[in-house]
Image (cartoon, rainbow, N blue to C red):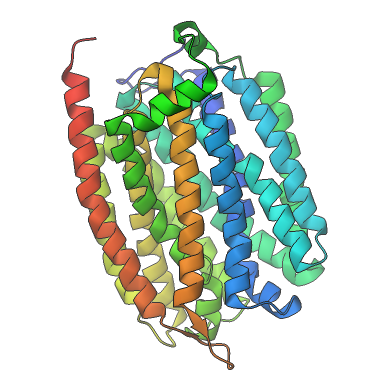
Length: 414
């Protein structure tokens, strides 16, 4: 199996560059499908006459179904060629997104989000297992730096274009755009990705249920799963009502919203690969701590703002997302070092599942904490910010424990 060289200018082979690129674009479609709901929230609250709590359910429906699917699929994740798994679940994701694009009612949209989550929620874990199989730990920070650019790209390209299409042709159109891009990505995977089945040679004869039980009973794996719960809390709590808070509390207009997403995304695209390379050089955990501290400061400031000039909001958002991106890159790279080779698929599946469910709970809690007044303003957003800051603080301690485990593991003779 190809492995990246940790040293030298030409770190990745041509095929590995393709893998990084195709997984980044694939993640772009998955993330955009989820993220586009936040800026569309203003339209959905109005057009479907739904409450903030109901919108929280629309967001969390994806997360809960993704969590359930990831958990159920975890036992089988190491028993199939990862390419075949990726194609199967990506095809289901495309179908679910298409249903979102033709949804005509709240219940229809809710069901469509559940279907999308069932398939889309497993894709991330399969992608991370592929990365762990094909790239050494010494370069995974760089790989994650490029993969995480998909988040920023969804802001720079996806969200502004999606919002533009939504303003011109309605809120359904962004989902149809995602379907079109995803079909092209899926065809590329089918044609150019090689089978990824080396892990099949080291599998035991345990049945999938036993494999799953073994995975979720490992103490070190359980610590990683606990950290994932808090890692996902921050992003899921702030995202659902970000656009509503920006427009109704901070004084933004629908035309200014894409500008903030675009500039913030450009900054994250520029810093992402640099952060990934830095995490390979000085360590994943130090970068995670630095990103967390920056994130906590920016969250505390942002969630206490009133009507604010556009340039200040752009600066705060850019710094906030640099912090969040740094946490994601470093923690993702660190998490890939925790499972044993024969458990990678199951571990990633359970970890993704737990993260999705935790994110769904966080979105519902956000809908309970935040209240929209008759005038449209959101109240108690500052409390939401303090909860996020608290979760980030606790996660620093939890990731320290995991980092110590990885360091001890790496010192053991192979």
